[in-house]
Length: 368
Image (tube, rainbow, N blue to C red; front, side, top):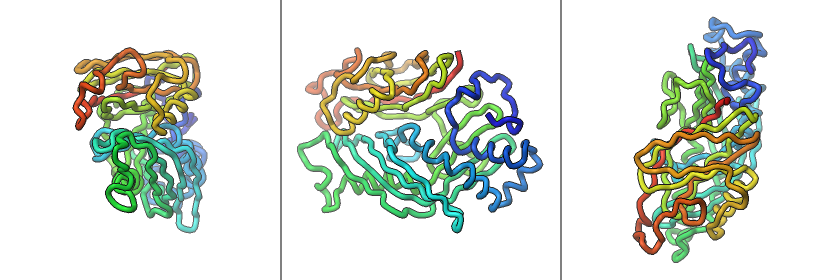
């Protein structure tokens, strides 16, 4: 993928031509390859101390990949830095304005998502914003750090609550005239995530990539619940989520580029039994949108292509061999899909809604 610029992995298990695009870090590496013909380690210090060269490389080769990377998969939303995801935001529109005069990029986006809070249960929302970032990167001995450093919010974020499962009270207007839930969730979570910027760390030998909100300085790397540092396969996602009764989480979509590839799934569950269901992106988008809009819970609008029960206290390791395409892995804690049936709602606490399923997982791409 990077030609003479990259080092060959000891075990190249996934063809470079079949991998999904990696986003910002390898694009920077590609830019350096185009600029210099081949990477020489002696050149790294020169590039690292040259803001103008770093900006030229980023603006010409990196900025165009921000939106495709941002729109690739749903973004987990957390109440705390190291806490589990309690909802997910899916960017559906995005544009980038490269500003050479200030050496910044303005990312404008919109999208929708869902979340869960005890006082509201599930709710759906829309969000749009324009955020200015100062992009930068650092070439380390083995790893490359790529940053998007928050400079300012230009517009918003404008956060609007739509569906609220706990419909007894209009929670969007119960607290203040501006909407207590919208201010709390939009300000503390969505807005907070945006203003932290982002860090991508890539290893050019093992071709591993990790992403984190916030700025991490070398040698710090994003925290992941699963250790995949010794593996030379592509990691799509590595996080922890919490799932309440009658809720779902739509992980992905994840791309299989060739029939000789498969999705590898590792999950560890604390809490009640849940189920994972694999569906294609077309049906997954429809099912996800219905979930965000608060439509009655039901089975997926298309065939289930794979799945497995997830039992507490035992690690699940499984793989899904699927045709080339994009797929969601849906974690389901409802009675309306799959074979795992949680207790009826009438038997659960009206306050807590029953025990919470906490799941640490990683989803990877491997070659058969």
